[in-house]
Length: 387
Figure (cartoon, rainbow, N blue to C red):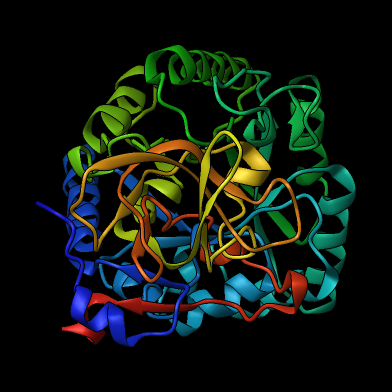
């Protein structure tokens, strides 16, 4: 499989914009569904924060996935796109009252609770609505993921989750409340994880220990949610368009000591949509500096903030030039020195008007775009619109 770039249609569109190859997306979803079926008693919830484009969400929901939401707006987007409420999980350390009420009103599957105060608020609001809320406790397993510091979430120093030491007391507190029902444990140690054995096996060991601890107290845990985190190949996207779902999902399922009555949940986000998306930008100027030359694009950190925020790498391709390669610093127009997509990037000779593709941008690209410098948000197009 190769990514399709309809260049003739690109030339007619105002840049910058996001482009999504839905053939790649559908192949990715088929791969997930294949592994889900092979494992049996498991559920997959797409992490909507990765990309909430309303043209993509109905495609993802059509493959039977649930949704992992972190805001009321994402719950609304999920429902509108066809995700069933009974497959929606709601996470986040700071759920507002209206967001909790929305989840209760729509009958979502579960609230992933991150603190005792949150648990008590959910119980109170559910009581006023005559509801009983399903809750899973997000446990901070103090497991380090080998990824960027800004996207680790499973260390004791992170803001996320309930400490392991407090787990039993929090479960007991839930049992004493009238309008919540404890149905599971939730874990998530970070994002863009490529060292699967080094990171996920310690998580599995920690979960097994916690389940054994609870079992001795006669506490049955119906659902185990291991979050997401599977990384993708940003260096050579065309060589690895499909992430390693089989290795990732089977590794966790094999090492967790779950009974047939327990359901395993995954929450992939980046791995679902990253490789199908590219940011398409036009070259405004080629500028010769003292020691290097710059390719100045009409896209900047307002459209794709990951390089500035995480020092993230995105492969950059010149879609319209086939000339000899030269080195460029590829930069945007924003009035910030951090508005740089790549330094010393080897590209076919760049000219004003060339179209550039910043690859692997389907996750946390469009969803994190901003209006800084009073810039318009980028449009997003799917392949079906352009062929």
